[in-house]
Length: 93
Image (cartoon, rainbow, N blue to C red; front, side, top):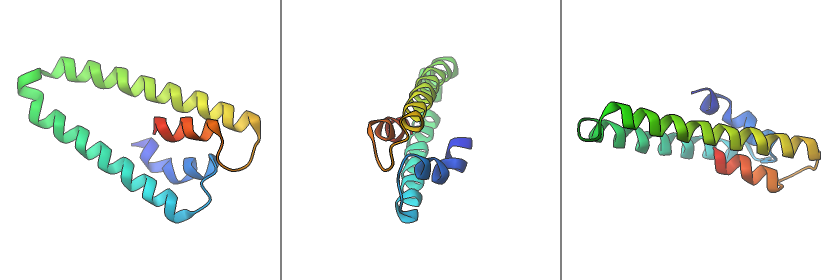
């Protein structure tokens, strides 16, 4: 939830200058979240809660590590606009 809440600010920090693009990215993240939650809801009885929890936890951990490392590289470089670090953040989101 916190990533979605702060996503327009995150998009701005990585070099997305258009507010419209930042909001569009937030909407896209919400749609991906909706798809993942629907999949989990429909398959929880067949797959089980524990495997879904562990898979989601590992995926979330990896995504946050990628976002943190890429954001660090982007801010440490100090380069304006979209850079390789920006793409890492956007991919992790």
